[in-house]
Length: 377
Image (cartoon, rainbow, N blue to C red; front, side, top):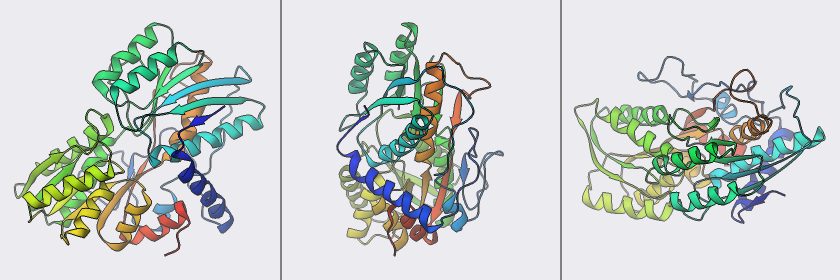
């Protein structure tokens, strides 16, 4: 039986309905999915890595931002039933979208006569201590594989090493991998969070003509994805002599805290020119505060929150980096089955399965809202 937090149900049901709507409406399928996909698709930047995919801002790039078309590969599982345990940073709509991809893989395995059951659990607030307790408890049960979206790299990586040493099969998934020297078997998700931070911040810098005061809202303390994006933002801003970071704050992936922090930043810096937002919650909180104070500060941020997309449409947010959560979930289940059968990274799956991020702009917002939420603007 799959177990999921009550908060997950509403968005999951909404997105599931939209997937059916999109299919019936003839939304073009994304290109064939690969376990080694492009890391980022954006308008253009001078600072991207050489192997980074680049797409023009268009309906085509929006359609390809989330790949809803997946088929299981030719691998033949060794068993007819698998039981997994997945835990992630915090209850949040972002992981509801990951869950949809998991459900599709689960359905396709069932069509082949293979039952996949899993628990999918997280705390109400990000906590490395809570995650440690969940992992240690799960290790005492009979799960084929334990998967974790790492809440704090320094705290959780040694826990994963301990579980591996005890014979537990452990993988990481979502947006946060463990430390480079961790013994976890494989990772499925965003491998380019630093570059996402660079790309978003470069877009902001260009918009501001490479001068101005900027604040950074990071997210959860120690969360690899949030910290890496913030590091990319800092390194990018450091390249420009006329740009200054006036505040770096941790909102703990809370819309309300991001709102409060932005109000305080604006109070201290009424001439603020921009904000870099490093998770899915803080663009919303920042946009609420910017709107309330009628500030001209430019916001760039992450992901597909419905309210954030509406702020994007209205021009309050300048651009958003949308991750392909659906593919993350789908590929996580496929890789977990192979790990459960005793396979290791190599020909069957890579050590790191890379999923894309697509940077979208105001002209893309209406189509993305329709694609994900059925909103017709």
